[in-house]
Image (cartoon, rainbow, N blue to C red):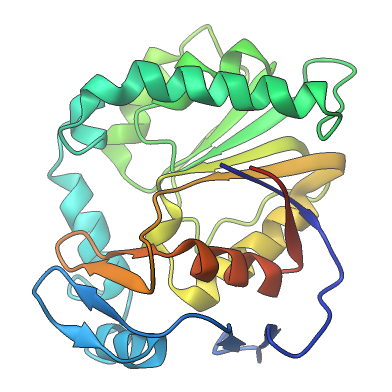
Length: 255
């Protein structure tokens, strides 16, 4: 878990700049090479992303995002499906999320005077919204690009949620400014490229209420990165993840 809040990025080790085409350059100390699921080795993040993004338009069927959507479109809309065959972990996962949420309240990182609004990013079939978020928020907006997942979520949460069901990828989602108490991002950020990761987090900052927070729950490898060629995702190290968050002007305040 990481709880992220705004910060002023200082120093030379981490910075982000971009032009209107979104081709920014991100510098992160402490992240070198990695591997992929085919056994290939990469000596840098730049080499890996060049290999992944230069072969096809990222949104095309053979591109980074297109391949990812195609993979998930063939996955059953079930707990076991969205968890990659690890459906048995869902109860423990939801319990841990509840404990972390209560810690945020107890330590004053999150201040709620009334049931507010949350966003469930990469919501899938609504597993997290139904099992956790809807217990605390009057409205949860589910953001999910895969149509049959979102349709299942809407059925599961019928009469239980006043939020919206938004079919869109996180790389394209623009949250309404100042709307959310919590933006919950779980087991999905690996589908974003580095540049889209940073741009997405910057948009999320603008989508928060004054005392709102972003919660990122994500798998991490011990060093570098590991690319899954099948579903177009990258598992990043903790250093890599934190570097991208800092590039977006966020700091870790609880984990």
